[in-house]
Length: 365
Image (cartoon, rainbow, N blue to C red; front, side, top):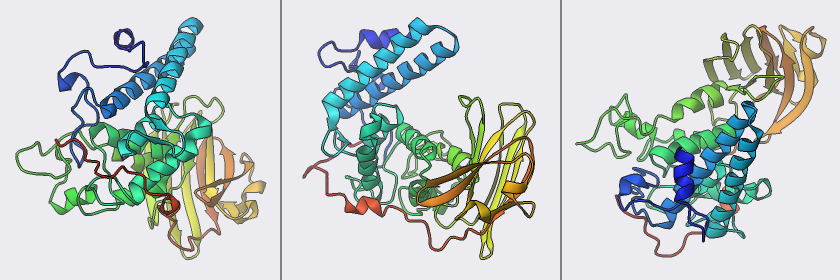
């Protein structure tokens, strides 16, 4: 199997996955970033990247083995994942700052997105990632822009979407200068070209940067499917923390086979959210509001609507939400919540100290 092959190429000394061939194609790091591709198979960035992928695969294999009732295999794969996490942290993590290798965006994203970073250490590493996005990318890429490539962009989008950081994704998704999705549009593209610079001579329709699509559904429309939650397999939270977006509408297939719908809008009078939960499905719906009393469904306070369970309050990105548990049906939620100002984007990162080594130059493409 692939996992066994990787295990055979894991160094007993440092515990890291090492290249089995001198060819760059066998051990790439991130590919086609704005500052170049990581093609040196023996570099720290390639060792970090590929060992993180191995760790991610081992963890997934452990989860799958549990579902299949193969407890011994689950424990074996979980132990492999833990050993790889320890090896990665020992080799590449700065314990004082939470940075990996040089702190570039991909090098922060990969340990976070693949489960390497221990829960107690996540705050430092996320702060370092936020700094690399918002203040100093560590390369010639301007602040507030993506500095990731084919794989790094996927893991960046997945990580921040699942963490509920619509504010950070909006920061780079709303750019119109190089490198950005808006830059593609300004150059006349309606597809993703192969490279961020969209230069001539490369593919005009490539799959390198299409990860942004998952954010539209999960982050902005706010429909999340969670197969591991036996109680509520759907969570719906409008992306009101995504910059100045004032409305969104989206649909997604639920595990029951039906379709979940989310359509929300903000105006000067408050927040409005139409939600459809398909048959044989329960959902957790988060409605922005200052209090439970400020939320209604169909014009009636939610606490008085049969079938709606008020779970409590939750805060995400400094926005307070009323958490509701609902069954199948169509709902028209509203609240007195208003966006006073644009949600803060990248503000906390600016308190972090400079972190990149003087004279650092990424490997050119």
